[in-house]
Image 1: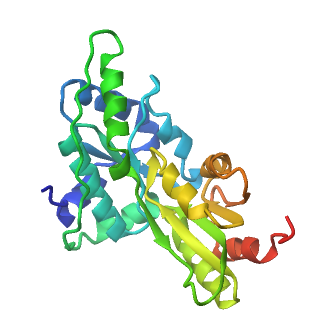
Image 2 (image 1 turned 135 degrees about the vertical axis):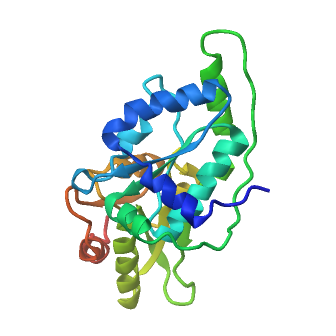
Length: 269
């Protein structure tokens, strides 16, 4: 059974974090580790003025292989997800990257508190190597696909069934999830039925969890600190839904903006 990292180890992971500008070097290093049948968790800090650069992270490998990207929305989240990244690296020998927003990285560095051990998914080593120039890529992709269930990470906050019918779903991730949660709570107080889904895996995107959460809902709001990189994916996954984007780039997304989408979007559409 793999044990989660201690708080101090998470602290060290954040202290050794790379910037988004160092992604090409990190990708090269992770590819070499995988070829050598070794892997380690890494951390990348997102600069606040540039938003959460989901596309850059998801396309960090120029050869098209799928990276494993985990994103926390709190210090406690960071400890648990760092443990999962470490377990995936040691259990499946595949590199995993934790991406942390600047403000959260500062909070973790300032306070490496102890953490209660949490359940960590079990990952499987898969070796489907075949001769040929694409052997390593095939082994990488089969490992990601073979551990798809363990990688589908998200937190759900469901509308209490006795209060109102949930016609809305709000999807968010990272620090923006706090604004989304505040908006959801305010909307519920106004009698609007709404669920919240907080993504913890950006790549591979937990598609089945998103589709399942949207089932039976009429409207979806995606709140993210960029120009809508996850919003486009949700539109693809939920073609029968009205999918509304609430975003900001160089500043945090405000709860009031998310609440405005829940209150003002035309119910006739």
